[in-house]
Image 1 (cartoon, one colour):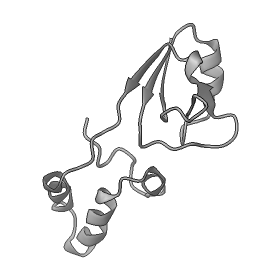
Image 2 (image 1 turned 30 degrees about the vertical axis):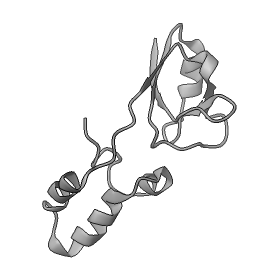
Image 3 (image 1 turned 60 degrees about the vertical axis):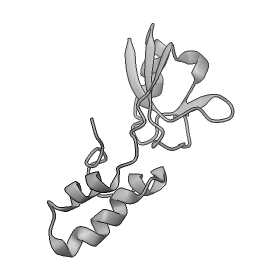
Image 4 (image 1 turned 180 degrees about the horizontal axis):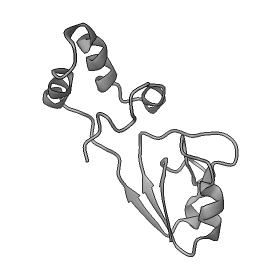
Length: 112
């Protein structure tokens, strides 16, 4: 069994491993069962970084809901005042390409 996080399928049915590619293509090909967690914030990547939907046995959508104003305020309140404006703008971004270039850990603002 192989568990992996992927992007939503594109128009041709391919899901992408996004920023966590390494040996995932190899492991998916060897596993008897592939369980994929689809995260709508992950983006398409290039190279041998895709898996076709037909190769996935179970697909679960784990896309987090956007943060609401109360959640953003709670997260922003724990950082220094001079950095709060930038943090508030970063947390409000929902475009995945913008989230991937951040220097903070990718799961910092995500709910579990």
